[in-house]
Image 1 (cartoon, rainbow, N blue to C red):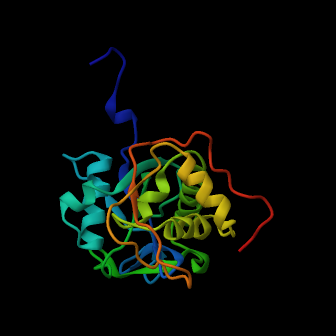
Image 2: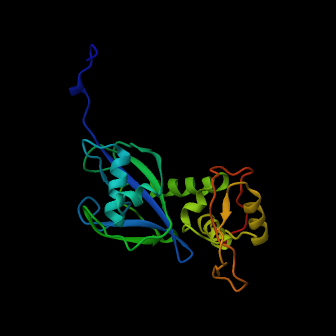
Image 3: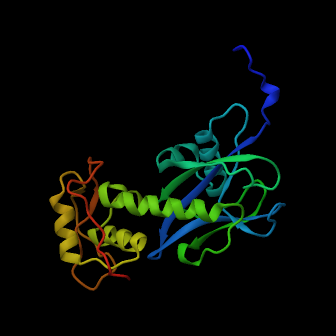
Length: 240
């Protein structure tokens, strides 16, 4: 132990892992929320999460919590896009004690109804635009996560994480329009996607309809690329 170091001089604190979980359901961006069943904030909606156990990392805790809330097994959770967002450490963010939260963002293409677990009374997917007054500082965490995802769609292939294994370009465009809350020009979007090496790969087999009135559309899957060159920038001043 270094000279002069006294562990008792530092107040102990807890660490939680909190999750901003996004998915697209029926053409609308949804976020996974839990209704708290215990104080503090009993009856309020919050992001799923929980305390980090003594023998696990923050990421292991986040993946465990995600599996508990969604009913997915460990292999399915490992296959999802999952990234650390940032750390939230304001001294008074939790009325119980000093609690530092390591927040994560996860993108899910399609899931069964959530289960709820731990101190949650219930869990639900809620339209992002309808979320109000979350417990703790979870509103800030959610807004930060939404901003991160919207930015990453411009320069990465992240949008395919919202899609099923096989999808049409119309469905991929719908992801961008839903997250960005804007309308994209269909021919221009198609041209940019297909001109980007490794963004998507066409799947052999018969085409299928993507919900539109036109002819059946070709099917694609995620390509090998990670970054978009050039970036696919969101249009300014074109709200949905």
